[in-house]
Image (cartoon, rainbow, N blue to C red; front, side, top):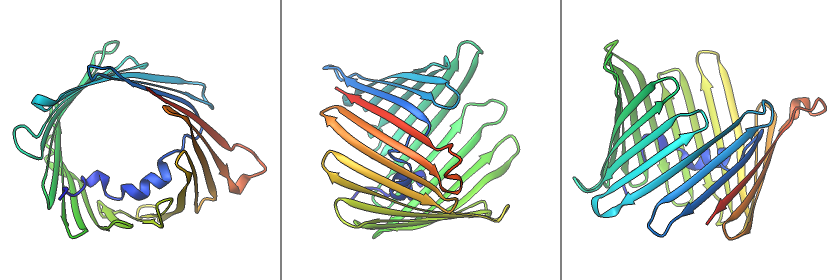
Amino acid sequence: MAPPPSYSDLGKQARDVFGKGYHFGLWKLDCKTKTESGVEFSTSGNSNQETGKVAGSLETKYKVNDYGLSLSEKWTTDNTLFTEISHTDKLLKGLKLTFEGSFAPHTGTKSGKIKASYGQDLVKIDSDVNVNLAGPVINASGVVGYEGWLAGYQTAFDTQKTKLVTNNFAVGYVCKEFAVHTNVNDGQEFAGSVYHKVNNDLGCGVQLSWSAGNNNTKFGIGAQYNLDKDAVVRAKVNNSSQIGLGYQQKLRDGITLTLSTLIDGKNFNAGGHRIGVALDLEA
C-alpha cells in the first residue's frame, strides 16, 4: 500500500485541472534530454508578453541509485544557483532527507533548507527548517490516511518570535474516480475542491474558497478532455467571468505544443485578453 500524499499534495487532482496546461501571457520553451550515463539536462525559458522580460534556467540531475542519492543543480538567468542533494530509503524505508541551498554571486545572498520526509502505509510526515542562525522557522506537516479518508495538519514555528505562525487543517476522501478536499488556514481562509474522473478521457474539477478577512468568495469549474492519445482540450471559468481555454497536441514523439488563452468575460470588447504558447521538447 502506498503512503498518503504530503499535505501540500492534498487536492492536487483538482488543482491540476485548473493549472496544468495553461501559460497565460507567456511564450514558453522547455527542453529535456538524458545521457546514456543517466544525467538529465533541462533547459527552460519564457518571455512575458506584457513586460518583455525573459527568464530562463538550466538544470542538471544525476541519481546514484546504489546509494539512494540524487543530485540537482539549477542556474537561472537571475544569476542564482540552486543545489539540491537528497538521500532516499537507505537509512530507513520511506525516509527521504534533503538539503536545498541557493547562492546569488552578484549579491552574496545565501540560503539553505534541511528537509525530512517519512511515509508508510497510514501516515506521511514532512518537515523542514531553514538555515538561519538568527532564528530558523520550523515547518512540519502530517497526513493520516485510512481506506481513502485523509486528515492532515500543517504548522510552522518561528523560533525567533517563539510562536506558531501557521495553523492549518485539512480533510479529504480519495478513491479511483473521485477526490474531495477541504482545508482551513489559520482559521481565516476556507477552501474546498472536488475532482471527478468521469471516464478515462474526461476529468472535471470544482474549486471554492472564502476569506473571512475580506469576505471574498472565489468559485471555479474546470474540465479536461482527451480527444485522442495525442490531443487534450481544457476549459475553466470562475465567478469573475474569466474563461480559460487550452489545447495540447503531441506533434510527434518528444515534441508537444500547448496553446492557451484567458478571456475576460466582463470586458470582452475592451480587449486585454491573454494568450500563451508553450513548446516542450524531449529526447
